[in-house]
Length: 157
Image 1 (cartoon, rainbow, N blue to C red):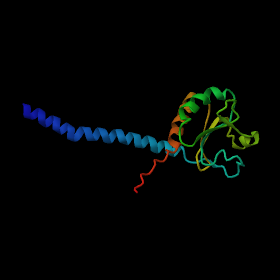
Image 2 (cartoon, helix red, strand yellow):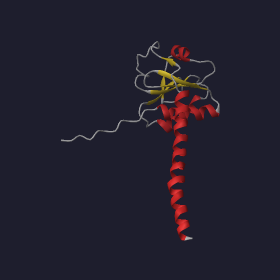
Image 3 (tube, rainbow, N blue to C red):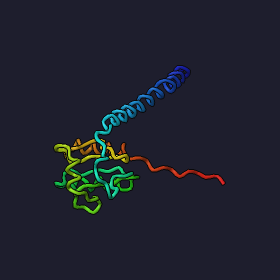
């Protein structure tokens, strides 16, 4: 009887644990693939005058509609303020929002959308409304689009 229990435990460790790990990792991979599909570039920004280099080399959350924008953008800013290349731009009243000209915001508007994510290459990745589900999706997408800080290389003498 003890031998049978040993075989069952060993068999489950050999079969069930690797299958569970594969399934868990596959779900994460599928989630990332679907998110990257949704984040394909929608529009490029070379036609936008960026004399202040607000968008150059930055992952920017663009505030297109300023109605109560600070109440939404403040927690997002607090979450991502230390992230590599993150910035917030638009016509918000808060100090952490980089100001943009109204003419530039008019060029970037897309219907009733209130926010947009712009990557480091100057591509608009997606637009979002003020709905709670869209705001949650925007935070998830920001976490995916933000590049990771490069680790320092170890140099040998």
